[in-house]
Length: 47
Image (cartoon, rainbow, N blue to C red):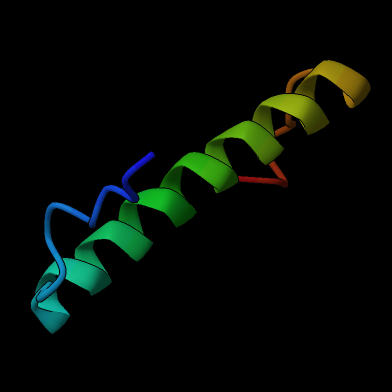
């Protein structure tokens, strides 16, 4: 079985940061959703 090499080995720094940013957005979104499910919708005090 051959090991598949990554499609983009030489990823530009900007690309990497873009990926990290999107990943963080998704994580924050999931976290917020979980918190809201646990404690109800956030009040005006908590944006």
